[in-house]
Length: 98
Image (tube, rainbow, N blue to C red; front, side):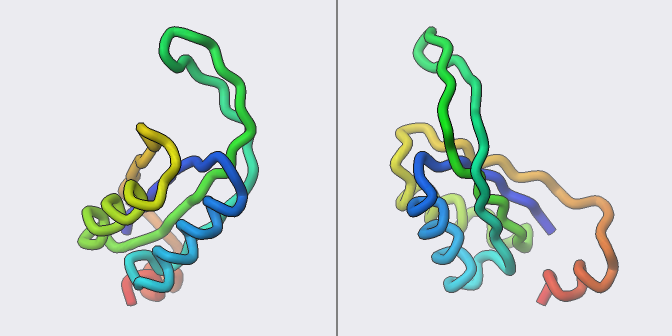
């Protein structure tokens, strides 16, 4: 199982991406929540309100999910980071594996 993170400029965009991934069955679950991000962009310090989308999926769905996120995303360089889950509640892992 993977947990994939992306950040979006708006709640609407985050919810649209989350719903599309789950409806297409590329993800078993996605959560969207607000955050404050601090970063350097084009040499300048930036502080921005964003929405995190945390996506749980099978490893085999990553490439298609990444393509979908890029297609739907408003950022020119969206954060799309996947982390492999090494431990999980066995019942949750079984559900997530379908």
